[in-house]
Image (cartoon, rainbow, N blue to C red; front, top):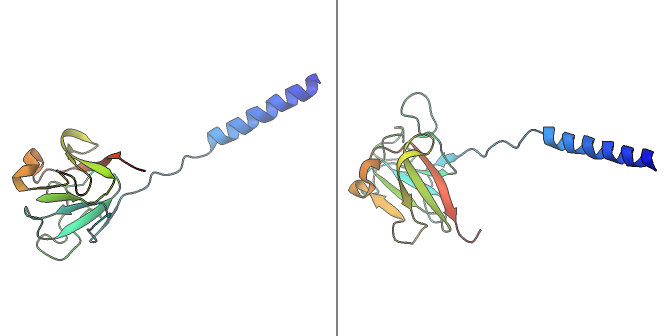
Length: 149
């Protein structure tokens, strides 16, 4: 009986250690494309009146680079196409139906910030001076609160 108890304890410990040592699933990388629209993420526009080139961001971005190679550039046709998004945003829309998005002045979700309400709610879009210090100064963004998930 004692032998079975010891064997069961060892088996449980090995199983626990095996699970604990498994690598964590990689974080889901944010995607960027030119397809802004209903239920399709955070749309960042080059122009201050929802004009010029734009990009749709799906997922959290800890750093919109301001130099070097990056996929975070304006994707659609129009003024600004191909330019980096980092510190180069004129207006923003949140097309997420259930989630708020927070945009940040600094990389790694730091500094002054602004919440874009979920799509259709007051504050779901901000342009030009409505962005305050974040006009042409966005360095990171994340999904803040989701309702109904």
